[in-house]
Image (tube, rainbow, N blue to C red; front, side, top):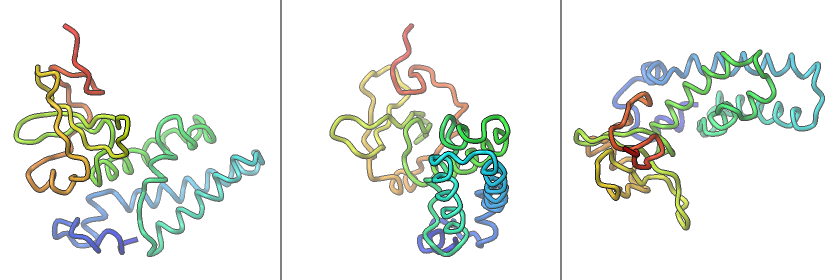
Length: 188
């Protein structure tokens, strides 16, 4: 698990233990184990092929993440996103557990690369990462919260540079003055 995290200088000089605490990784692995237990309980009542494929993929992913394989929580983040596989298969029974796993992986994911809808700040300005556009396979265009409807900067492929110059991922509860959550201008 630590191989990927510590091959790059993403640790801010933290020990492995402090890094795991900062990103709630101990809690995440505990929750992933609980999620596997719940899915195994559901397996006794659900022999649907789609569910069984998901269960098998989930088990493999959990084992890989706990080993020294490349630790990338993207698949977990996708499966536990609201309305995705986890919600579909566990319904209300797994809601709290799924929400916590998504909370941790979402925080981790948004601090690894640009993700659509992530709220950011740079030099006392606030903005949101826009969706990909035609012919564009990367996120990273930022619509800043200003009256100017064309106040968009292109940071695609420059997440590390964005952070180095002082850019930050901010709380998703931040309220914009001139733009909506998707970056479109507010109507007054």
